[in-house]
Amino acid sequence: MESAPISVHQFQMHATSMDQSAKQKVFKQLVSFANNLSNAEMKALKRNTTLTNKNREGADIPSDENRPRLYLPGRSDTSDYINAVYMDSFKVKRRYIAAQSPLSGTVQDFLTLIFQENCTVIVSFHDLITDKVGVFYPADNQVLVVKDFEVTTDRKVDKRDNWVLRTLSLKYKKDGREKAVTHIQYTDWPQDSNVPTSPESFIHVIQFVGQRADASSGPIVLHCLDGAKHCGLFCTVSNLLEKMEMEQEVSVVNEVRRVQTRRRKAIANMEQFNFCYECVLQQIGSSNTYSNVGVK
Image (tube, rainbow, N blue to C red; front, side, top):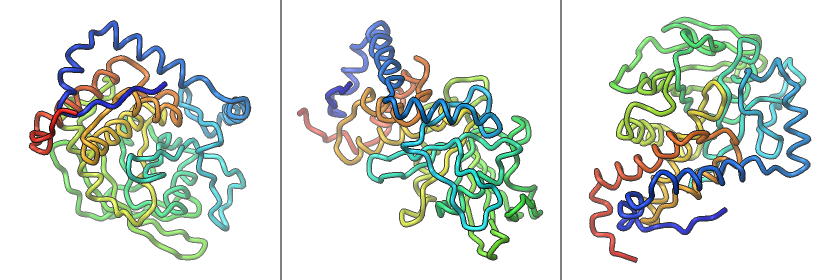
């Protein structure tokens, strides 16, 4: 399903004219569309669902079409599976990887993904300790050894209002290669909430992540417990902001649909759907970029 983009000049009027019943109807159509898979995708999804040691209970299970394959030479695990999918941004193909947060037994897989894809930025949406996630970096200025990898954390941790910034160093022991990775932990999204505390905070972290990522490096890795709830909202809002900036138009429906084709459980409730509209309105209201945009 496609929805005609709306100029940013007209978006506020469009958003206020849509009542909740109209939004709910569109949202139900989006969910139905997201679950309409090809036979090949259904077979791959069923096969991947059986990998219970690689998937968190309740996680969004990917098919194989957009899933990264683990191939790093010399790795000890022969399976190429990881619960992750490539996600396009509005400007760049495979700009993101939306990953399930590692289990205790899949930390090496997660680090393999970071290393082989040449990722320089990781975004976490929860605390690794309190949420019992497989830990992939150590306490400050210490070393974590995970099979084929050594991970160290710089002693300098930058704590800001809505995120914590760290620098990780990954070493692949098989050949001695090392790489530096920026780790951003977003702290303004309560774990019992479907959405962040505010659109303003969320937009700020999206912009900050974009500033920290080297355009010539690999994808930005986003991870959350099911691989979809937090990562999907991040990708959707980020794409909306990029399209607004480049083309001065926006379609929430189209961006949600595109993200859901890769992560079916993304934007899985009306609260998140409404939050996408709120972020667009926040950006329009806070920026002078659109003040001189004419009516199309």
